[in-house]
Length: 383
View 1: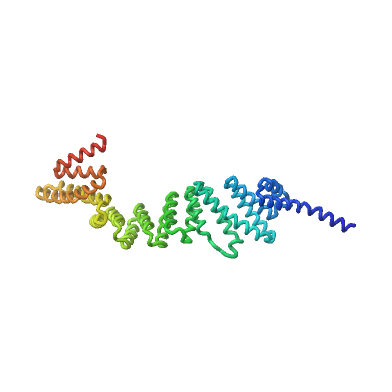
View 2: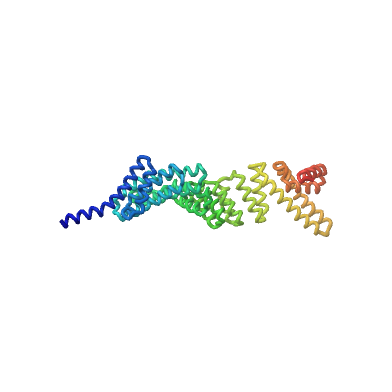
């Protein structure tokens, strides 16, 4: 009699466990039949009941429920709840000797598709923060031991998409992290490098801007966009030696690119190496005859040299020497004139060019052109 009583008590004690687990299984069946409300009502108690709250399957089914609710309501938080439930199931299953690992793995495989679609949907609807969250959780799931143990892989496409979503969401910190990771796997090519450059610019991180561009140039030496951006960076930060080094490489690779020749001219101009600057500006104009910046800068060099030479002449007390020095100044002003006139044909309303021409026409007593320029300047200024 005592043995029979003991068995009866044991069965009675275990019935609570089976009752709660039965609710979880029932909830799964309701989900399979599309009855979300019935499934949810049975899971609510199972999630808190001491007999089922530590059972891995409770969280597997809860994750499936949250996913189904997302598909109906499109609330990204429901997908995030699903992720949390799956991760809880993985954690509990490890303690339960991996009895549900196969079931979790299958469920997660399908769930990753839902997450990816949510991220893509976030892009199309411009809900970039949601897209980023969805893609981040794809990565989190892909990195689980159950997926990496048998066939370790890195989903570089998802990493890059996460970076793009973070960029569009203006989450610069995460954008920089995911772009850096994508670049480390050589995914995204020069686009990823240039996008990271923009991110660092938004972060005000000048140190990493240079490092990223140099690394990008080493990885993609044929991407002229990276080389150009690298040159611009050094020009903007007044690091002339580094800028010249990369400019020379750029010109050697592409000697027919007028932009590189112009940039080298600017660099030499800033370093007061005017003869060399003139040579590079002229080469740029040979390749692109309407290159306004090169035309204008050439005109400015000769014009400024003329002003300096005129100051030298004015300081001369000997009349003969004054005339000789003034003649030299006039030659420089005359050298400036055709470049300024050509620049004016490219940009007819550029005030700085017109002012220079007005001064030159006055100096050489070109009255008709002087009057014409004066009238045009007055019109542009509303006088």
